[in-house]
Amino acid sequence: MIEDLADRLFAEIAISGAPGWPPGGAGASESWGRLAELGLPLALVPEEAGGPGLDLVEALELVRAAGRHALALPLAETMLANHILAEAGLPVAPGAATILCGGPQDQVSLRRAGSGWTLAGRAFRVPWASVAETLVVVAPGEAGPCVARLEAGAFTVEPGRNLAGEPRDAVLFDTELRAEQVRPAGRAGGPDVVRRRGAALRSLALAGALERVLALTVAYAGERSQFGKPIGRFQAVQQSLAEMAGHVAAGAAAAGGAAEAFAGADLLPIAAAKVRTGEAAGRAAAIAHQVHGAIGFTQEHILHRFTGRLWSWRDEFGDEAEWSLALGTQAVEAGPDGLWPLVTAA
Image (cartoon, rainbow, N blue to C red; front, side, top):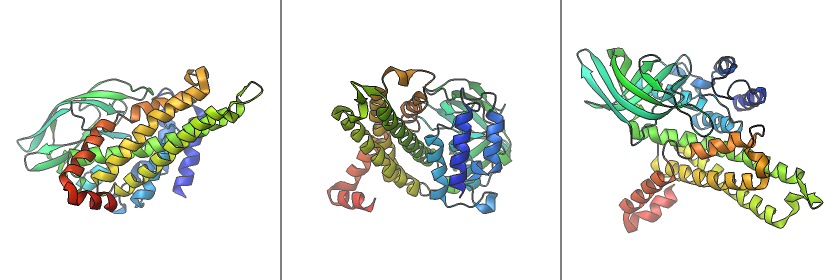
């Protein structure tokens, strides 16, 4: 019921055009308020921590739906941030929130300073940091990974954008934190676990956007005529559409596996999903623009809202190269006798 309601709401927000195009536009606050009224930013928070207590796999379908409508609001990031906060025993965010991606260039240190903590360093391409009210940082501490909860104004933002125009900002830290703002990560895990869960969310968002790109392209191929008949009746175009459909189906299946692996942050299914949806994103976007021709690149046409996200999201929380290396490393470590059980167990 919540998924159906959210799907209709996302469609209304996308049609209105106000909230997220460009991101942070005039209607963003009103649209975010509608999401908050339904409790969607808390979808991954257990009931005892103030959330709705949804099944995680079902709640994660909201991310796929958001991708399907090119929702230009930080819903997935807020869901993940609140999930991490709840697992660490920290208060959930009252508004929009985000979390560091844990990229290889990030340099963040968290050290004890008297009764509190000092957070210092720099992180890159942080989603929606310029509009988030709360920022969650998972960093190594003296006795293991810790979760820090920062409010807007406690860090410096250097604005940036991805190819879809979504905020991807550099964040600078030189902040004194009170003791109650930092907790041991506990079930939230360390930065590597956060990165896996972020990759799972991006895989689901990619799967949703891929579904919409396929639908748009099939519809256009049936409407656009050349030489007296729809271009979708030409064999070459049909072959391309069939190839795209195969990539979309494979990406959707892989993303479903990542959703099931989200709770345990299992490496193999999440890495496989990020690789597969990333590969699908590249090929599907290329085919979509080939079929649409020049009109698909115009600002007025809706296609670029989705293909821009496909090209951007495939690189966020790790690209295909990073996760392929992780898969290969796990296979090598399993050895000749462990490879088959490794594959079949997944």
